[in-house]
Image 1 (cartoon, rainbow, N blue to C red):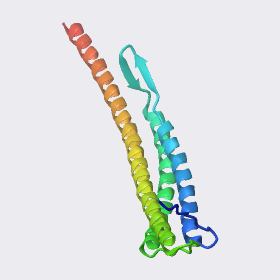
Image 2 (cartoon, one colour):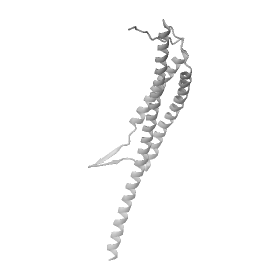
Image 3 (cartoon, rainbow, N blue to C red):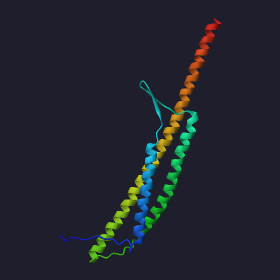
Image 4 (cartoon, rainbow, N blue to C red):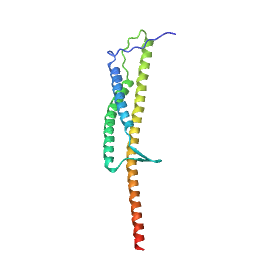
Length: 174
């Protein structure tokens, strides 16, 4: 069994190297935004066995604003990701490697390996971006649901107070 050496000179393969460098920056920014999305939590109040979200109409707009700032970062990241994906697919359609292999077989194997590696990067980054969008949408739904929950609790409270007032009125009328 022969050992083959796979080596890529970054100076001779600037297109491929720039794709990998840009992908590294996108992944770094993706991890930063993903961390912000996962750290975004709504405070909860535990009363006996009941957990109530602590969001009121007064701080709901602030929660939405904080979440929209994260959303703006995601939009910027998606634009960068879309441009990188276009460039990566263009490179995959017509790969141009300048290889210094000893044999034609080594050059062929290196081309296949690097091409498949780039395809795997495209697929993995696509999955990560989809997951980030899904997580962000879940956080948005959580804020909306919490606001609706607090409105329902407030409505129930006023109905209960109205019921007590009606009962007092009935007793006073008798």
